[in-house]
Length: 223
Image (cartoon, rainbow, N blue to C red; front, side):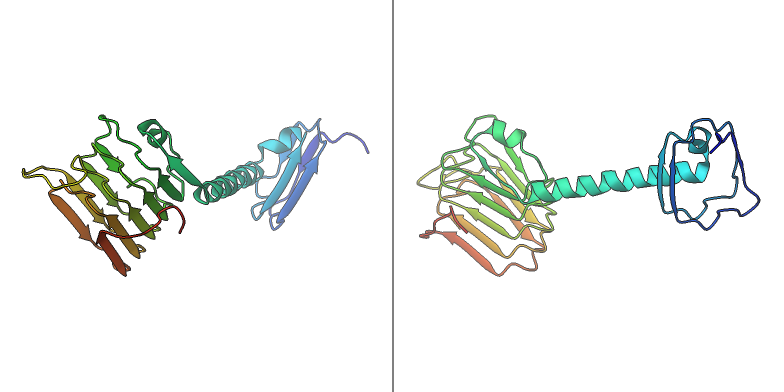
């Protein structure tokens, strides 16, 4: 076939085409397809010279690329949200992917003096939050707000307190906020946890069916 240098279409020519595959048209210098390909849904182009400048085809290619990026991002997010992570220190916490679905904090973890605020608000895929015993000693404020997928919170004994075996005789401004988590069904907090907190705010947790606070014999490792 002779090399194609011009491709001209009359008004509405190829207008209703939905699938386009164009390959190896390297010498095209003139292309008059102003109203063509207006309904294209799928397009593949390779080495098509001037045809690559047709607006409808360019838009279809960009749309396909955007859809592919969105699909890959959704797949990656879904894969990450199905993972669980075990936290031992503030460094672990700070570098954690906020798309994670399950967080477990091991015994005697995250007790650094500089760890003052625990804010879960950005963990939009979080379903389970488990804290084992004697963690977050110096955290002054806990914020668990606006997590639509959060299902369970389990906190062991002597967490979020400097008073491990008693209650203080002074007022502190340490605060616990749990709000706007519509899927939360279970909240368990072990004895002496939050023992020196002065504020406990729990609201808009309509699915909550079980609250346990205080002494309990419960393994927090497996749910």
